Amino acid sequence: MLTEKEKLETYEKFRERYLRKTEEEAIQIVQDAYEEAKKVIPEGHVATYIPELGKVDPNQLGICIYRMNGEKICIGDAQVRFTMQSVSKILSLCVALELLGPDEVFKVVGAEPSGEAFNSIVELDLNSNRPYNPLINSGALAIAGLLVSKVSFYDMLAAARKLCVDPDITINDAAYESEMKTCSRNRAIAYLLESKGIITTDVEETLKFYTKLCSLNVTAESLANFAKILASDGVCSKTGKRYLSGRTVRIVKTLMLTCGMYDGSGAYAITVGIPTKSGVGGGLLCVSDKRAGIGVFGPALDEKGNSVAGIKLLEQISQKLCLNLFFDPDWEDADQSSMLISE
Ligand code: GLN
Image 1 (cartoon, rainbow, N blue to C red):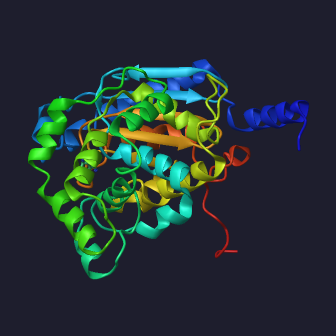
Image 2 (tube, rainbow, N blue to C red; image 1 turned 180 degrees about the vertical axis):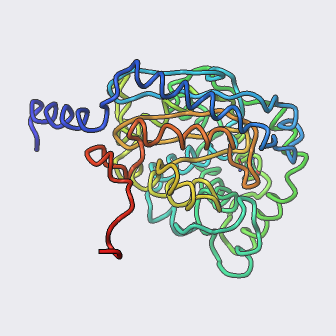
Image 3 (cartoon, rainbow, N blue to C red; image 1 turned 30 degrees about the horizontal axis):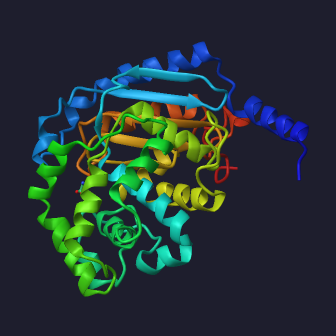
């Protein structure tokens, strides 16, 4: 075990290595990236398959970054409320892992990327008896089936408020009603899961539970708080309390890297390299391990359902702020072509 002094020294070394940019430099980097990212908003569209989301102004963009040295940088629409949508899959996965442990959870879902759209049903029926992973709709519905008989929606709301350090999170009733009226596809997935013995609780209750969690109103800042807890192995630096076990956090971050952006996860891992979960409300929850927690809101989406300007913004800052998981700040000049073959 490290002494407190040794822990601090380790932390200082880490800071020296990864948090080299001063606050002023970091603000400038984020501001420049923000301006660049705004330009790609017209390439995206707000989700309309949930009619209420179709009413959202696509031109909004906000980012909040907490770096581990304690500073907070918020730019643009970082305080605007929007629905969590699939970012809530991280919340339910965390609660399920804490409550039931990985063995129970991975009985009903796998841990592999699906390579299919977030609401795909095909591969579930044809290739597998379990959803590929907990971060696509089928997987999150399976997790909701596990949770619905064990915790109430209000327990989940309380957990969301704690993890997002945001007591003002409420359910967006209009978005909830709107999605419940148009969720035939999720209903079909949920009944298919029942037919396969994955959902063993009431299907309609499971569907309501899942959709309510998708309808929680958060901000980019609340997502940054949640991301920061995940980046600090489950401990909230504001309260000093551990909210999640190290084991839960490791599993969640790994799945975010491999599956968090659906069938765009691989390319995103290459260009950004920060474990992230997206939602069709425009949210991105991004965990730069031990370096920063980031929340983004950008409701104009690409064809995979991920925030188009949000991705652009993260592409711009990941290297410059040394947030890419695989970027080594001691080799900043290493991106030149290799001599491997020509020598
Ligand atoms: N509530 C949405 C759905 O189930 C969430 C999807 C998403 O954010 N990708 O379709």
